[in-house]
Image (spheres, rainbow, N blue to C red):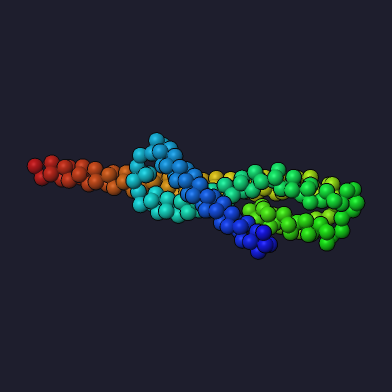
Length: 203
């Protein structure tokens, strides 16, 4: 097959993977929002009926969708590392135990990036140098796994932070609304009591 055809097919596969990640990201965000709604309703039934709750939900949903989409994509990329390692082993098999210079190493990395564009999206496969060719596959795979693990923890951290901030905002406005309602009720009761005393004096 012509090289251009292979490149086009790789990017079409990347587009298909991105579409799948987006749909799964939307699904995960929707499930998270539903679970969060029921948890908040169990804690306080009034907080899910306020305008700030809906405004916060509208802001939180796309933020979670983006993070969840990236999480799914990172997991897919992580699942490709084993296949990537095998391919690199096959490519560098001709080098035996000889050292690889930067030019040779970069040629291998460019080939891997073309064959695994989703991995290349997360990891910049450049300037890798090893003492012998046989180490390249294991060094590259280990580096990619470490990077993706760190990346995933960051994404989970952002999701947790967004949810925590949203919950705090909702409870803050709910508490303020309850306080205002209690104050208004107390003033109304006090006003009614004063009127009764005046009526009694007039009597």
